[in-house]
Image (cartoon, rainbow, N blue to C red; front, side, top):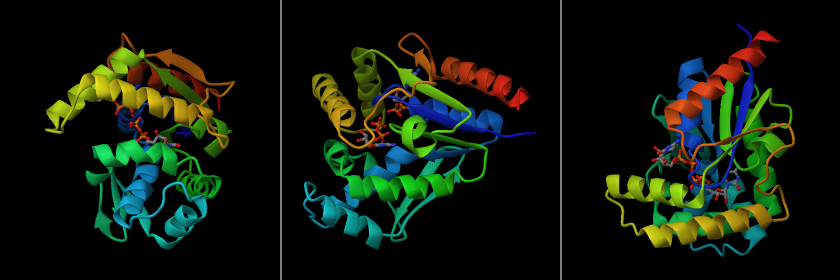
Length: 225
Ligand code: CDP
Ligand code: CDP
């Protein structure tokens, strides 16, 4: 059967990675978590005490690092210089610095190249902030997932509690708003809905319902190829 590429973008906590993973499982596609790639660089920068305001230093750091992903049914495993950092990149410290790390043009240029390379063969689902606009501008299906900020903060808070991470609803909501603002206002490939993306508000939808809707649109698009 013909395969397509699917781009899923949206703000923090909209359900992108949960939904993208489900869609990839249902269609037997490969899921690529581009946010985890930026998080891996932020983790490395914190580890090596790099100045996260310094775009040149971060670009050089990214160039020198071996950043790889492996795919499993549960999602991507992330490795930096052969060390697994899958869980570490979800820490509050990384979350607090990743939007600053990801706004530098030199960093984004390298990341976009890596992501395009990973999505070279059709049959991939990528989630992030700039997939439909910059990484895969010709993706056959683009989805922009949203949800109210209260609902997104509630989801993240629950997820933290379930994973035994320190969490406070108001702090999470504040962090999400700050990150959304930073991601939406940066000069290079800001978070924005691609003109040809399908917008889906998931405030009242479960991840399964959102994934089912996306799969049914994907199947329609595949039929038309
Ligand atoms: O899962 P969550 O929405 O919290 O974030 P993520 O998808 O892991 O992305 C973490 C951060 O990486 C975002 O807040 C952006 O600053 C950056 N990012 C980006 O700039 N471009 C992407 N394609 C993906 C993530
Ligand atoms: O990737 P993104 O930051 O957009 O969100 P996520 O990490 O996929 O989802 C954040 C949390 O919300 C996860 O714990 C999901 O299980 C949950 N979720 C939900 O409760 N309802 C949805 N419709 C989507 C996600």
